[in-house]
Figure (cartoon, one colour):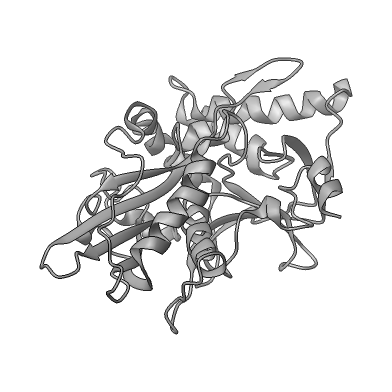
Length: 332
């Protein structure tokens, strides 16, 4: 599916609508979550757990949006694990989501801005809930079995991957990164990696395939929403240079004003234009780095529902912008 440019007027309208739901995630994040599923033993039986790739238009459970955001390639991704208990007719289901622990706007806007720094609250974590969250019908974009695993393999991915990742310290990897930056000259070259709901699902499938020996179905392919800026290059901002830092502060202040309550629609349009036409700075929260985006041109950003290869967290991949400099030294 091709990428779609999103006009700034429409983008601003979406921001206005998001304001109506922006507090929901923070207040209810994983409120009914459990630490991990409790799988029935299936030793001596064929693997009993189906892993379903579940996708729906973003905010489809909110009547304001319904399924409309799917028209813009905006989809939410999760995994549903379903087990028919061996020797019985009992079926158990669990939903695994990966998301910002605050909300969409909280994931892309700083909590506070000062002349010397910014305070962020954009941790991304897994949430496990009993049952099929919002019901099977909610997942109208995709609800397809992509892998079958044993109870032992399923327990391992939670014990060895999900739980350790979920217990990392506040403001440590992983953090939610909405924006992806790609090279103008080589679109396949990622300059800054995004990390969103789809990545968590992808990481679990990758871990099961590489560490636990599970096999994806022959027709398996993984697609997920990406919001992409193109640039000639990116350069690390010298946060100790007052002039450079002032430019960063101005862009994020424009973004905060765009999302702020009590701001008129003309003011929001003006702030959207200043912040995103063109995009000048991106904060890569997983490396704690502000980047100057050079050469971002019309249409400034695009939204796609794109094929992504099976892969793990980007800080384990040499060359990713999400790899901190000290980690690169350890990997070389």
